[in-house]
Image 1 (cartoon, helix red, strand yellow):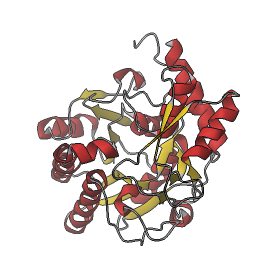
Image 2: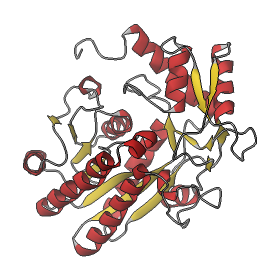
Image 3: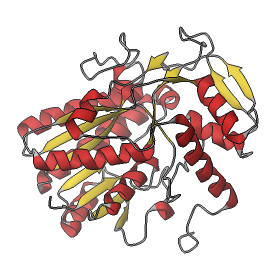
Image 4: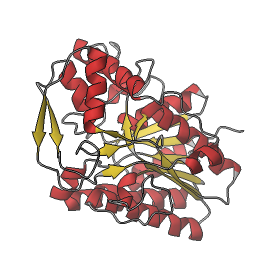
Length: 338
């Protein structure tokens, strides 16, 4: 298959940087746009064309498309913190939906043929059926999920009207880090459980907050489907290949492993890895958190022939912990880029 130039939006962020690595490892020509509001410039490999700016900047996008001859977009740029979306809903509709309108508009005007979108399991809200398949009703219970669902609808409508196809990958809980230590989660003030937990394990925090112990789950804490970020990045490359091979087809795919772990089970796994107990503090429930989210990944596996390489919580935690230790020791950013 011919490898066409790909623009990675949010390529200096957590998931975007791993997708960038997966593309480069397979020989795809890539460029990155990131406004660095949460991303880290130094995590983008040397030699990758980098543009600092936002996806709402139509002039900048047109320049990138022309200079890099972009034919496909992997779109990760946006805001992702559920509790914050409840406090600042207008920010989320601006950053996730309105800005993506600008991106799609520029892509259509410049003849970009394929768009792969970073969506979320939050579009399902609190689903009635678990595991959740792609036919489950979409009923978001927070502005984050609603803003992503609006973008899915916008892509579907535009793909019906304009000459491009798209894929929307609905992530469950993304965790871990590049097994070769080239990237990981850096963002300040993270609310992701495993990131918070490994920060506590390396002394950056003195405890882990557990939000809610009275859910209708086996141990009372929320249950989630944790997927390794590098397995997710692999799924993006396979999805892009599918969009190119089947230009009349659009993709809507859940991305998870099809099994759930509670908050306490994840923390128990970390305790085993570090051979000590990380202190936990029980807190009230957070607004916008469903009790249980587990993916049915059958469509992903069958459509893309995707086979995960790192599908165990111990591996996910080990890679996240290795990365966190590199951050703590100042070894995560190449010296030439610091």
